Image 1: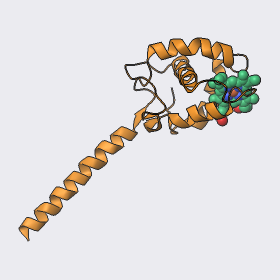
Image 2: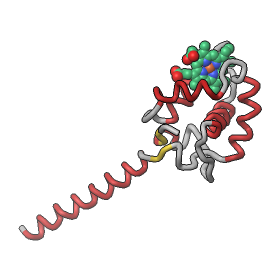
Image 3: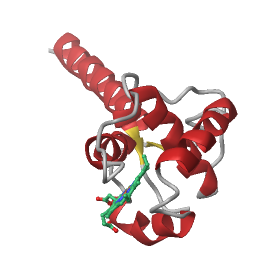
Length: 130
Ligand code: HEC
């Protein structure tokens, strides 16, 4: 009996550790340096060539509220699917990723050592307010 409750305790402890570590993985936000400075720079030309004619940075400040607490991947995917409005999906995935890095940087979020990649963890990065 004692032996059993000990193993129940052990299982509960493992579950707790698992739960805590996965919730940490999910609480990464765009404030955690989730893109590199090189991506921001690469995004600048792509942004000017494909987006600037219709949206300046003020546009993102205005729509940001609607994106808070959503995964960054959703934002990326919306842009891939719908933008540029006159030619949706016309850019490479990498160019869209650079553009997202550029937008985040212009919004005041910090760059870091992690390369932003839609195939690697972007769904676990939450959008937050600046
Ligand atoms: C020809 C004009 C035009 C171009 C070019 C353009 N957009 Fe848009 N964009 C629009 C319009 C129109 C909307 C929808 C109306 C609105 O939300 O103001 C929109 C909406 C958006 C939204 C809001 C989506 C949402 O649901 O919240 C984002 C983000 C966005 N555009 C980003 C971009 C990016 C990044 C580029 C460059 C790759 C780009 N747009 C190029 C016209 C354009």
